[in-house]
Length: 341
Image (cartoon, rainbow, N blue to C red; front, side, top):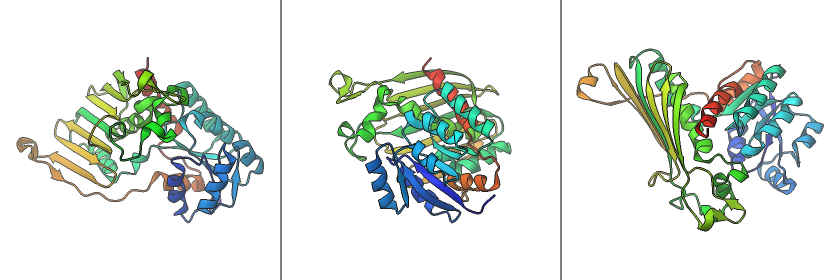
């Protein structure tokens, strides 16, 4: 066991700067370089962030070999092939969500990383929200009684507004609308986040479900350049949990007026908890005790929690596992896959 983790960034696209910022602030981490299938982009990324090395492929980085772990920030379609190579080289993995494009690939990755005894985590980033962890603790302690109903939503509107740029001409957004470019739509993109957010809070995964997915016309013939716009834009999941509780989880890119907002309300036999989280704010409210008779909601305070980035590094240094693991992400992938059945 060492006191410092040599980390490789794999993929230099949209999310990679966030990973660099998160890991660079940890004194236990040395970011040794980056990988991208476009060598010029890898070079530019390394120069921009002061990294000593850049590589044009995972194979090239593995041949060099002087790193302990990798942060996999490649597009969804590349998670499986790149991660399998890194596992084969004995490297610990922090992977962006979703773990893979389908449950068969996710299970293969999970079996491989567990057999190799490597630290593995998936960046279900809303686990970093302190309000979620406090809500989970309160529910586990029985403060709202038995969970009876769950309502959760992930609200975006970048198909309506230009707050994040013009999606019609930007590949960073267009690929998210096209199955042929590896997207599973809003369900695979942010639906997995709200599904994890809700199920982590109550400590249960669904045992039964029904789903409706909708793709709306957004361009003539549903095509822009090389992108066929056939991925789902809105998704609604009706869920039943192991204790009989029912839930509704929905996500859309057409929730006009919301840039990036999560809402979660959990109702129980003795109280309720509600979380609302935007990019710059978060609220945690509870209706408990005698307040259930007057429907009074009170704001609760929260304490900071350790981020997933920090947990991953701590796990690599200690050799112990942390959640959310590849195994957990595979269970979520099963729920996602059933929505397409």
